[in-house]
Amino acid sequence: MTSLPFTRGLARAFAWPAGVIGDLDDSVMVCRCEGVCVGDLRAVQQQSLALSAARTALLRVRAERLVQRVNLHLALGGSFEARP
Image 1: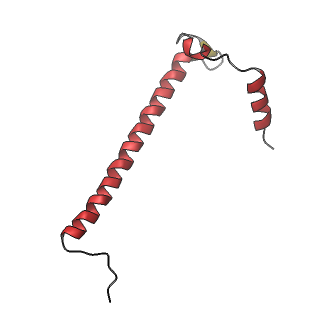
Image 2: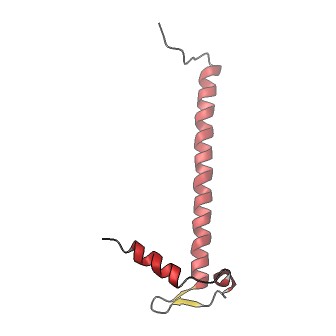
Image 3: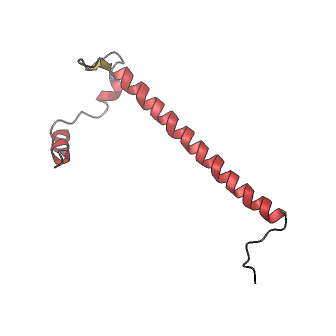
């Protein structure tokens, strides 16, 4: 059983006005019991973006490595034609 429809209903019924979250000060408390502030959430979001960028860069490097491996194979006289 999932509570996703309930969560969506709450989000629609009690939606934040557009732009309000972006205007909040970093010291605004989001969760008193855990001591989480808006600044903490922004820092996590920035770290997540940096991680995604690093993963994308790694994928580009790996793809380029494979391209160069094929180029080397062809430059050394290799072929991808089926042998008779």
